[in-house]
Length: 351
Image (cartoon, rainbow, N blue to C red; front, side):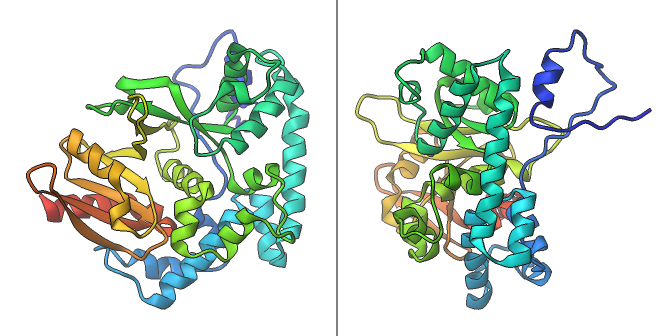
C-alpha cells in the first residue's frame, strides 16, 4: 500500500519516530508557487514561451520585458501560497489576497502549540515575526526578545527550518566544493518561505501609503531591487524552488568577517565545478564593489547580477588585479528559472 503524507509538521513527526523506513520512504520537498507557476496560473503561457526562447541571454523586446516586470511586482505582493494566487486570479484584488494571508498566518501560529517538544509556542511566534523584520540581514538572536536566551531562540529557529517555514542562508568561506564544507552557522540570514506572508507579518496594507508599498508598486526597477529586501528574498526562494525537489536544498552567501568590513555576496551557486557569485543589485555597474572584491580574492572571472533589468552582460576591468577581465551576466528577477541555462551558455562562450 502506498501512503502520501504532507504538511509543515511532517518533518517534526518523522523526527520523533523510533525508526525510519530507509529505502522505503521518498521525500519530496514542496514550496509555495514559483514565479513561473504564478505566470501559468495567470494564463501567461505565451509570455513564458517568449521569455524561454531567449536561450542566448540576449535582451527581450521592451514590451515582453515590461510585462514580466509588471507581473513580478504583483507576484512580490501576492506571493506563492496557492489559495492567495487563486484568489488573485479570481478577483485581481490585493485586499482579498491579504485575507488569505492573514488566515494562513493565524493557522501557523495556532499550530505552534504542536511544536512544544521543540520550542515554546510564544517564542516561535516572536521568532517568525522577528525573521520577517530582520529579512535580508544577519539574524540577531537578541532582537527576538530580551526575555529569551539565545540558545532557546536557536531551538525555535531550527524547529521552523525543519517545518519548512524558514529558509536559512549560511555564510561560507567559499574556497572550494562543496560550499557547505566551510559553512558557519553562526553567520546566517533567514528567509520566510513566502513574500506575501512576510509582507502581511510586517502589517503592510495595500490600501495604505507605506514606503515598502511604494517600492514594490511604483519605484523604479533600480530602486526596487537596490533598496528592497523582498527582491533578495524572492531571489533566494526562486533559487531553491527550481532545484531537485528530492533533496533538502541549501542556500549560501559570503561576508567578509574582518572588523568594519562591509563586503557581502548575496548568494553563491556553482556551475561545472566553479563557484558563481550572485549579487542582487541595481543597474549601476560601479556599485558592485563587493562582487569585484570577492572575484578578485577567489580568482573568479564570472558572476551573475540579478535585477529588474533586461537580459544582458558586461565586462569589468579590475585595475587592482593586473587589469583582469570580470564577466557578469544579467539575469532578470523574473528569469531565475533560466539561470542554469544562462550559466552553461555563459561558461561555454567564455572559456
